[in-house]
Amino acid sequence: MNEISTLGGLANTATLRDFLNDASPRSPQVPSPDGSDRIEISEWARFLSRLAELPDVRVEKVANVRSAIDRGDYESAERLDRAIDRLVASL
Image (cartoon, rainbow, N blue to C red; front, side):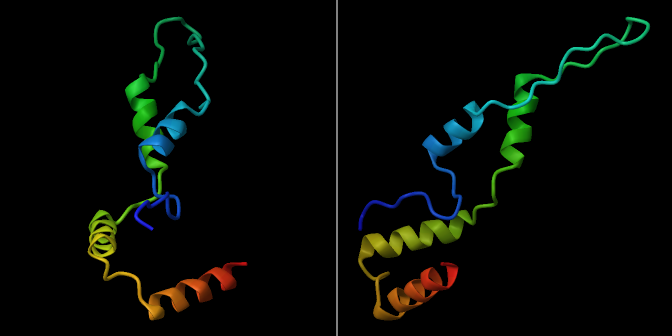
């Protein structure tokens, strides 16, 4: 139980890479009617836009849980029962 996989949409490095490499719609370059103005969205702006779509992560809570697991005091009968109840309820 030392390895923790992605939980509830929490992005790790691999999932973030997959998320960013996912084909995102590109805005076509359409010339303006008079040909003088145009807008180009940079790759950085696309990245930030996609990053904003990721779910919020409570980093401090995740760190606390990981520490408790490493110390061996996270697993308890109460937590296991609660996790099973939540799993069954989600099915």
